[in-house]
Each structure stands twice: as C-alpha cells, then as structure tokens.
Length: 177
Image (cartoon, rainbow, N blue to C red; front, top):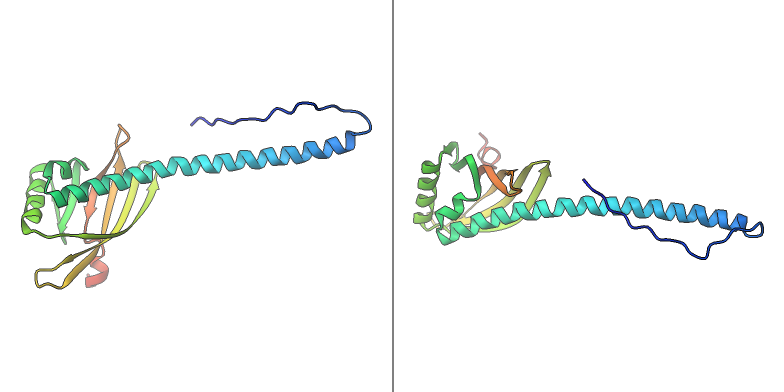
C-alpha cells in the first residue's frame, strides 16, 4: 500500500540568538501539527479504501435485486461466484448453476415483489457480510418479512460476488429452530 504525503516548505526562516527560544517552540508546534496531519491523512486513506469496497458490495446487491425485479436470470447469476449456495427455501440450500437458474425462474414466475430496507455491510479482507431486511406480500395478502444474509468474496478482478445468500437468515430466531 503506497502512501503519498505532501509537505510544506518553510521559507524566510532564520536563526539568531535573540529568536532561538521562540523558534524552538515554533518547531515543536510545527512538528506536532505535522504529526497530527500525517495521522489524519492515514485515517482518511483507510476510510477511502474501505468505502469503495462497501460501495462495490452494495452495487452487487443492487444489481442482483434489480435483475430479479426485471426477471433477468443471466444478470442475477452474474452476481454469484462459481459454487455459490442460495437458501431460497428455509433449510433447503440450492447449489449448481442449473438448480439456481431453476429456483430463480420459479421465484420470478410467482410474481413476488420485494421491498428492501436498510443495508449493513461488514468487510474483513476479501470477505464481506451483507445484511438487509426485505418485505413482500405473502400468498394470503399478509406481509412477509425476513433478514437477508449474504456473504460475498472479492474476486481476482476486484469485483464482489455472493458465495452464500440466505434471504431468510433470521428464520432460526423467528421460528425457534
């Protein structure tokens, strides 16, 4: 990781016995200010590198949800890493390209329409956790809701793709299983 720093050059600086004590104090204050600026620059850089990853994770989720709303299975599948697991029905993990495509096609054909709440993203290295509440009208007209839990992995090209997607991640707490 490269860090780039810019330093100010002081000009018109002279040292004489009459201003030595004041100059030493200015040097100490300048050094303290420079240290504070360097520490702040490091913190800002850390935030800047974290934000693009969070933004990329959210872009993957948004791409999946908008593709789902549009019925675009190819675009849905592009948000998943090879070997991804999706728990479309509680307790029934689905694996494999053909099985995932069939599961998504069935969901799309059902006409279900989801509304999404706030997102939370936690990133540790090349792994991200995404949490989001969703709601949808149930078959009997009552509102269904759950906590979607997705694990994403940074790909060699820098893209984030889902490796585990569990749209009913709070089921154990809700149903007491």
